[in-house]
Length: 91
Figure 1: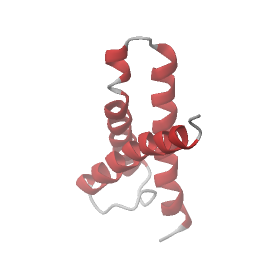
Figure 2 (figure 1 turned 45 degrees about the vertical axis):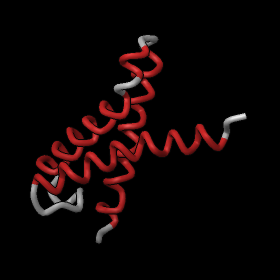
Figure 3 (figure 1 turned 120 degrees about the vertical axis):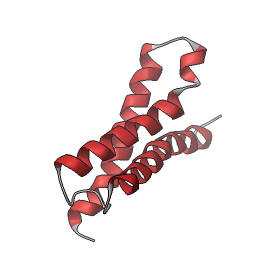
């Protein structure tokens, strides 16, 4: 595993978290807020596929279905990371 492969997944997590955070900040509709995990997962898929096809070797995947799997897991982990932080700082 090269240094670039190590950076790809956390980058997708951070960008997906930021997209989810922006959606949360820009809407007050509870129906849309419930869709934030799906939005994060979908953004992870899109980012991973774009990275897979534009920067070969940057994402640790040999084919595009693997890139999709890495993207969805990375996008959903952004939601999980946010929820862990939220629960630990809950009063």
